[in-house]
Image 1 (cartoon, helix red, strand yellow):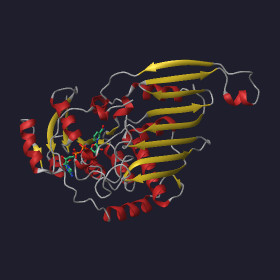
Image 2 (cartoon, rainbow, N blue to C red; image 1 turned 90 degrees about the vertical axis):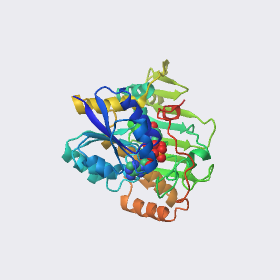
Image 3 (cartoon, helix red, strand yellow; image 1 turned 90 degrees about the horizontal axis):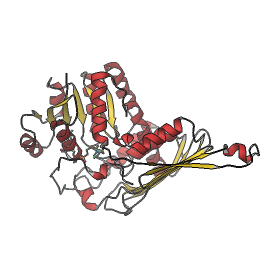
Image 4 (tube, helix red, strand yellow; image 1 turned 180 degrees about the vertical axis):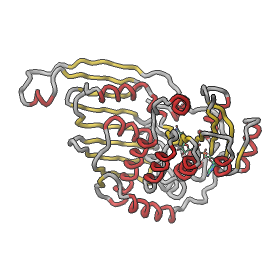
Length: 386
Ligand SMILES: NC(=O)c1ccc[n+]([C@@H]2O[C@H](COP(=O)([O-])OP(=O)(O)OC[C@H]3O[C@@H](n4cnc5c(N)ncnc54)[C@H](O)[C@@H]3O)[C@@H](O)[C@H]2O)c1
């Protein structure tokens, strides 16, 4: 038995997913339908994927009876809308990240998911990276004790102005709903909360159009406070070159640092809290270095989604968990807009209202896309770059 999948939105990433499935790289998954609202793209698809039926709207594809699962690879605002319709129709869903642009309505989506009994996952492909999986295992095992601080400098999401000009929805409040925190760093915000948990409060500074001619932020700094008193700092940018990817998590019994394709684990012979109050005489440090491995995170998530449908395999990135990164992202924007600390979860109504104002005033709605060719392969910049 094979999962019959349809893909909605066949741009950069949708084309890469379609190619992988069409070429048989995902065991147990068959490409059975494609959908894009662009007539030009639809015409190209008939040549690129001969024999695969095409649809001009997600609604037609969902009602076609040709698929039992969909992958949503449209711009962000459509993700929860299409997911909701598909789940209500009894169709499994794999949504591209982020799960949506705002958290308002996510409870309805989760309720529809529960009622459907279908598989609902999100393409958080960096969860498949060996070093993040190792970090998760180390932290959950208690090896570094209680977390005191996390600092993530993730500024190597460099993008040029040509990238922002490549599709007219990009970098607008009206069609994308945010900048680096909404488009590139959702992977890192997700991993941050996966490893360190959810903060209680955040304060953020966002620089809107600092490095590019865009209206949304291309640089953001989040300061986070956690229930146990731990603190966190998260710095993201698309304007630094070459930028940095360095995550340091300090615990009472050890420390992990992920940088340049390595995870360095330092285990303390004695808990620092005990040492501090004289309950042990010294701290010795045992150091272990773990190296990263080549991986294709997108195909791992596609295979996991397929296996979850066919064999009940646990999801690597369940939709319910994907909402957490959106909560942090929305809270950071709210904090930056209001210039104050924000408690989580975000006030959804207030957030949506302020987002709508920005979308209404969006001055780049008519920005013309300058590129319309899709290579059909996964790009290195979508992987974990060290
Ligand atoms: N997981 C990753 O590594 C990764 C990488 C790239 C992009 N993405 C995500 O994938 C999504 C798409 O990004 P992209 O770079 O491929 O964008 P893109 O602009 O290249 O492609 C989007 C495609 O969707 C089509 N489309 C728009 N609205 C639609 C609708 N309502 N129904 C059907 N088709 C519609 C457009 O015509 C276009 O062909 C974004 O949410 C982005 O964040 C994820």
